[in-house]
Image 1 (cartoon, rainbow, N blue to C red):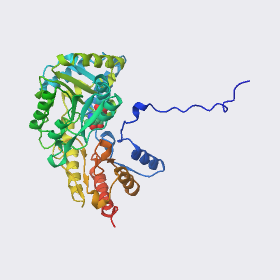
Image 2: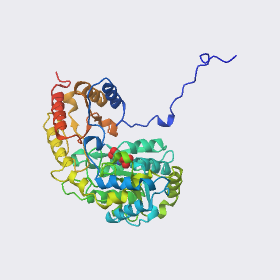
Image 3: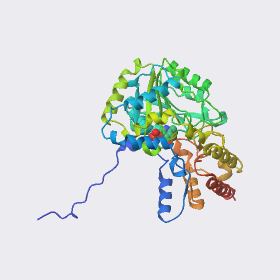
Length: 414
Ligand code: PLP
């Protein structure tokens, strides 16, 4: 007779212990609670994810037209690094940014920068290897370094100095186990753009301690106030550098999944690392080919998306509004972002009695139905910050900021 299905208890499937210290809170427990509330029919204002399309930002028509036309030719896998046309356009972009010593084989496309961050961390890090990552950071860097078995070591970015990296803190954290330094420039979550002098000093530290440089520049075409973005790799022809960018943010097509990385500078010392990168790149076969097919068109002319960050453009005007409205709330201060679409305000934790930023985020969600991301989600060590995505239209932002002011007027004060 057959064994009753009920008589053998199925064993429990535990997640891998590799994930024990991995944190990715942008879509974490508070976002889950928001989803639960939505499923009950409540309307939640989501200021938590940097995804432009739902807020009415559109890619230029020519990009969509181009993809539509090319789709029939995109049925097969491409070369593992990517289509020639895409890499040729990225090559020209690398030249415009002054990246030294870049050949076609130094360019890899990915399913977003996300895939390439994970690929690089896996290719580089052994157990015990340290990598310097900013705090606050875009948390994927810390998560991927941890998952790869490395040890992320956080250096502080200084709010008092426009959120630039604290170079003394950075250098003090270098050890004999340090392999690389990550910078995120322009920065998520702070909106900082690092001046040339700061970048030069980071290069100096990397040179002195023989570190690889990873620079996440996905927001480089979203700088405001006439600031010119400088790629750190352009200042480091003698060092091993990997520069990351893509179209998710600059062209408002985060859903298409297309990003790239460019190896530059001293490639001799990266030879073995590159073998690892090539193996991992081959293992994933290639990135999404229809999305690769539009890179040339997208990079060839992005005037219309540039308009969003110029005076009068939506991102620019919304940044100005949110910056002023936040600073008008007693107990809240925020540094003005120079790029991207995030702001990382500080709360007076004594005034509001805040000791746990996740609880704060839940309280705000329950009371005002506003979803933000707590500072801790960006590997920020204190419970005194949160991140707002200022992509929603002005009318919605006004409503949100009024609600936020009202919330802080009462929150935990007697
Ligand atoms: N790097 C930073 C700093 C980001 O903010 C993001 C997305 O928010 C990414 C990388 C991932 O972008 P992609 O869509 O190219 O995977």
